[in-house]
Image 1 (tube, rainbow, N blue to C red):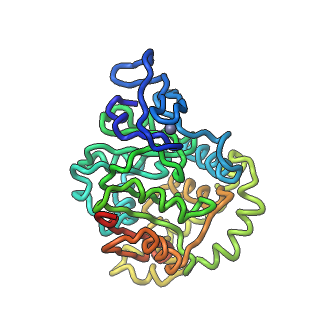
Image 2: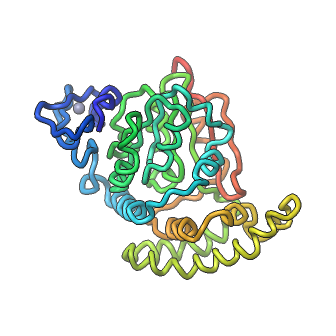
Image 3: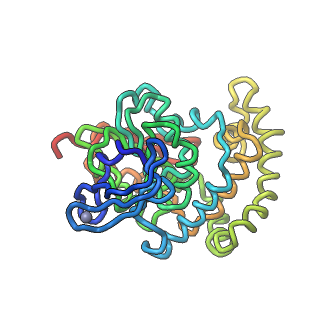
Amino acid sequence: MKERLLKYLACPACQSEVALRDGAELDGAEIMAGQLDCTGCRREYPIAGGIPRFANLAEVEEEKAATAAVFGWEWKQFTQHDEKYGEQLLGWLSPVKPEFFRNKVVLDGGCGKGRHLTLAAAWGATDVIGVDLSEAVDTAFAATRASENIHVVQGDICRLPVRPVFDYAFSLGVLDHLGSPIEGFKSLASKVKPGGHVSAWVYGAENNRWITGFINPLRVNFTSRLNPRALFHLCKLPTAVLFLATKLIYGPLSRMGDGSSARRLFYGDYLSFLSRFGWREQHSIVFDHLVAPTAHYLTREQFETWWTGIQAQNVTIGWHNKNSWRGFGQVRAGS
Ligand SMILES: [Zn+2]
């Protein structure tokens, strides 16, 4: 971690500031190993492998730990960077545009391998902090340590180890894997300063009945219980079907005319979008859908209650690729 991260950190237990203990091990400007002490409750948090560790899987609820463990495995395996991540991110964050990030202090709740941290920094954020419970933080740290304004922290999204000083916080494809998604969303929004903004993207219940009815029972009872490496190999089969369908049918049709003939096919909007990705990315998407012990598919009404729950203003809720909900809103000034 860089020393400038300290001013954003807070004890997840009591919200007090944390201080760096003397004797930390440095590698250039990077604090690779050391100890953070809470100035309030005196709890101690280690810095290891360059990352401040405010939570570990041994201390969180079993289901949450199991979910974090498999996503951690996923992001250590699928470390690829895809040039289409920027376009994909803007699809999830719409109506946010790259220039929105300029001079903002940004929080990514559930940063995975850190792919969005790099983009937020490239789009002009002052500082970007990615928090994740899983071992994916090691991948994220390795991918971003050269940037002085990107920071990676291991922590629980429901007990975020940061101060409420953010201009913008987002969480994408993460909250729907919590036991209580709304709890995670409220925690995320509580770290945004009054007048700042929040974005969230989650799976939708609408138009996903083939997943909730057919894939979910398979995921819950079978695929999420497999060893991740076995599932990784097993996923090559459905990925092959997906790859051929998107490359031979959805992709070519979506490039013809206005693309409406591809969109009329089964799951057309989403599969047309996926047709632009290569094998490795599609493999990671299939794996991602089958690996999680917990996954919620939310209706628009359920998602709307998140925003009323934090009394957000100027809320925009959008239907993304006809299979997921994206929301953007402003945290009440003076609340
Ligand atoms: Zn404390």
